[in-house]
Length: 288
Image (cartoon, one colour):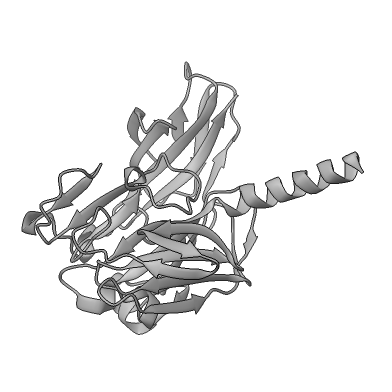
């Protein structure tokens, strides 16, 4: 019986570990494009493909608390992004790339609204604050909060590598066009000078999706690497490549299309970011 319980616990922990790494990474309400440029972005930070059959995204309206839910579909590969847009045609016109699914009532939110990512009935991730009692949810109004991003955007910090069912503003960078007067938030910028337009919607938006189309053969080898160079194959031209540790510290940066010198770096997990004029791609790099 002990062995069965241990195995069952292992399976549960493994399930939670993989699925807690599918998370909300960006929300956009661009000031210059009304509802056509709004979207919610998910990212799979785990090392395995996730079946999204039982997944859903719920959003609530900040002023009224009314909710909308969009069931997700398909699967999400390791290191891939998943875009939920208010309008497929509108999003494609604005960004030049199709989203994964549309969800007008879910994704077309104006910045004072919250989101919950579900796997079945389990809360995996959340943007915004709410309470739950025996399955009954009470949603907070996002006006003048650390998570309001009206006419702006909110994106997850690169150092956050797993989902959080309890919203923590320290995990986010938020831009709000409205002057909220809040001074207690971690990385929160409000006022008209901090509005964000379509051109400001990086670093995650379309990072994986677009790069698959432009660089179908892009690879990083060897990975893991023990010494010497990492070879970047499939980049169309020299680009800026940045390497961060898990504390978010920039370790090195260079312009290259082929080689990244990792000699002298400590053993561990790093985040490699490749900056293209139209997208930014993030990959994990292991040095052993």
